Each structure stands twice: as structure tokens, then as C-alpha cells.
Image 1: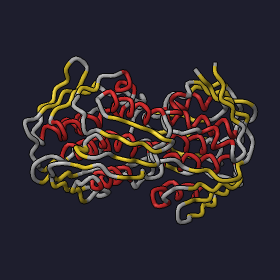
Image 2 (image 1 turned 180 degrees about the vertical axis):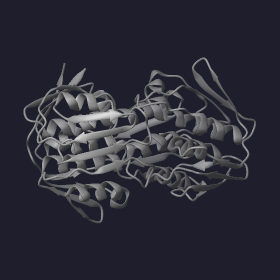
Image 3 (image 1 turned 180 degrees about the horizontal axis):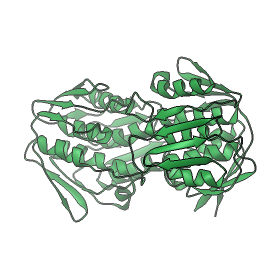
Length: 418
């Protein structure tokens, strides 16, 4: 077990390089096993635990995987297994993308029920509804999702709720469905567009990704391709929060500024100077911040994955702020940890009311989940004294080398083994 020890109170100056998008990579890697011919060479894969897990699962299914720095080559041409039952499958939420990928290519799949962060009820009913609409029979058997179809037939599918996971998963299966599939009330996040672009690079026929209606014309086979994953908007947003909280001037490179517009708008409202460049964003902050109200919404709204870092930032902003978490019902677990550091936050249902304080003080805290861990890192950076964060394995699921990136711009973070 490891922990992060942070000596707080230092402004940040310099450049931070953003890695490839976690949420895109963990869907694109399973999608790569749908290639019946050739190999997939994928660049800008983030060096995080979740991508390592997915690659391990893919290898266990019989695909050949080779990795070099942030690039990976996947050869699935000889793959025959459709039974994903390793411990890694149970560790992460995104392993459910294997259902759509395997069902699409082989017309059958058996995948252990997925794990992931405990941020509330996260059902896969919309996934199952989509698979069944395409003609599959789906059941939960001995703790695994088992899906099978003689053939998949394109159809119209309306999602009852906007779901990123269901949109991607059903899109994967529909690629090989006969005829046309139309997905309505689809999620519009950038990583959905990235997955669709990757599939199209392999020979799929997908139109409308990034809108609420996606049209998929079924094809017979996919071939390998070369592809590069988009930058991670959540990692970028987290470093934007850190720069705003600590003060100073930080250039955050390798980003798509349009993906960050909702975050930039709130920072500007708080008094932070934000400059958008072609593929970077510059954050300048004097730490003279004012409170704002935030409501998380599906893209292009304010991302739920940035809510927890934003709550930390608002804890030192002047006046009262209100955060309405409309996506997940258990995403304020980090508040108890922030209170240990002197934050004044009260939570009722899915709303947090924050009274800004002038400073936080270092304490021993826990990363209760991935984005909560990022929130605690920011809290440690701005606190007086020393902060110790345990359960950093949650942070490592989504932030490649977080301490190294922040130390390069002036932070004082040490990773030690407990």
C-alpha cells in the first residue's frame, strides 16, 4: 500500500502535459478485439491502472498485446474465448464494454459483473435493453452477464436515461448487426465520439456520434487500424482546478479547449483568468476567488467527474457556494475528508452547501474513490502543513504519474510505501 504526502502552500508555475483520455481508452481497447483482420496500433494510451487491467483481460481472452510507452498493439485475429472471468474484470466498471465487443464479433459473451468506484447505484439495465433489442438473449448467471444471439438485427433503440456506458456498449454490438441501428437519447460525451471515430477507422459505418441520435449501418467485418486517443478532459479539468486553487500560472497542454468550456466558464465566473489556445489552456490565479453555484449535467454541461475537485476549490472561495450533483447520488463522500481539513460543507441529499474559509489545514485523509482522490490532492496542495492521503490506488486508476506532473510545476508531493 502507498500514500501521498503533500506539503501545501506553494503556488504553481509551468507546464503540465495531459495524457490520453481514460474514459475513451477503456472503451477503445475492448473495441480493438472486434478486428477480424490486421492489428490495431493505438497511441496516447494513459499509463493508469484501468488501462493495464483492460489489457490484461484482453490477453486472457487470447489476443496478443504488446506495449511500448503510451502505445499498444493488439492482434485479436486468433482470439476465440468469449469468457472474461479474471479478477481484473471485477475490479473496474469499464470491463462491461467487453460484453458489447464480444457479442458483436462472436454473437456471445460471458463477462463477470463489473466493479469500479462506489459512487452510487450504477445499473446496466440500459445496456441489457439495447442488447435484447438487437436480438440477444441476456441473463445474469453465477455473477456474470451472459449474452448470446443467433444473429443481431438493427433496430431503433431509445435509452430511457442518458447513459454514456450504454451508448458505447450498444454501439459496439450494433456495428455487426444486420441493417441499420438508430440509438436515440444517446449520450454526447467526447469519448463517445472518439470510440465511434476509432470504429470508423476500422471500417464501421457510424454517423451522429456527439449528438443524441447515432445511426449505425451494420457491416460484416472490421480491420485493424492506427489511431490516437483524444486528450483527457477530466485530467485537464482537475489540473485547471489545482492551478486555480494554488495560485500562479500554469499552461495545461495537449487539450481540446472546446471539451473544457463548461469548466472554463465556472473558473472565469470565480475570478480566474483563463486563456484558450489551439491545444492548450493557461490558468492564472491570484487565489482571490468568489463562490459560485454548480450543477453537474451530461456533456456539454459541467462534468460530474470534476464535481469533487471543484468542491475543494469552492471550499476556499469567498462567500457561499452550492453544488448540485444531478448524476450520481453518492458523490459527496469526500466531504467528510475535507471537513477534517477545516472545510465548512453541509450535504443534504445531492446538494452541498459550502461556506468558504480562508485556509485548509493538513490532515490524514483517504481517497474514497478516483475523483475524490483528486479532490484530496488539491486540498493537500492548498492546505497549511502536511497532508497524508491513503488509498492512492483509487487515484492511480485515472491520473498517470500525478505527483510527478504536479511536482514539475512547483508542488511538493512524495509517494511513500506504508
